[in-house]
Length: 168
Image 1 (spheres, one colour):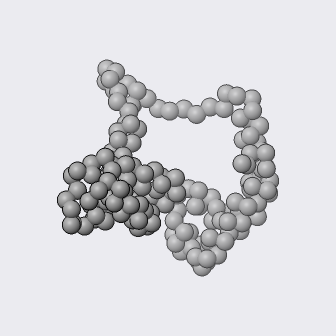
Image 2 (cartoon, rainbow, N blue to C red):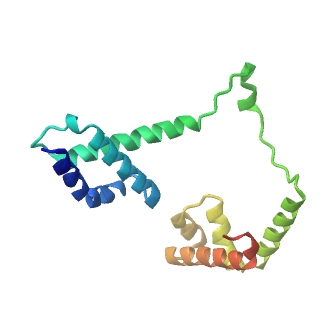
């Protein structure tokens, strides 16, 4: 198979690869990056492909391995190594302060906005913000799941309306 035929076959599988990326990521940009990395590696290592075998399976394997390697690389880059004696930095408590004058104003604005949201919307919103899952909130408040989702959505909308200066 010539390089042009090989490239054409890979390009014809681009949509299939795009569907397969959903298994790994929901982000469109990450998915497109993963597809491009997969195609680049396939073209780079074309000589490793055995003709008359499953090209789609070969590409899937490259994609899966690329995703795993990128994930491992990313998780290692987020790891904090503490080389101090007695692991001082890892054992130090993090303290959060509002040192900037603007941050106190932002905090006050948020508090005022929260106080304006109706309680029936705020209760599920706070529970969700605290880490409860939708179904847990529905069980605790004894309301339908759809109502929980709607109330959280409405609380977000009301907060966005009250805080337009902080939105995108």
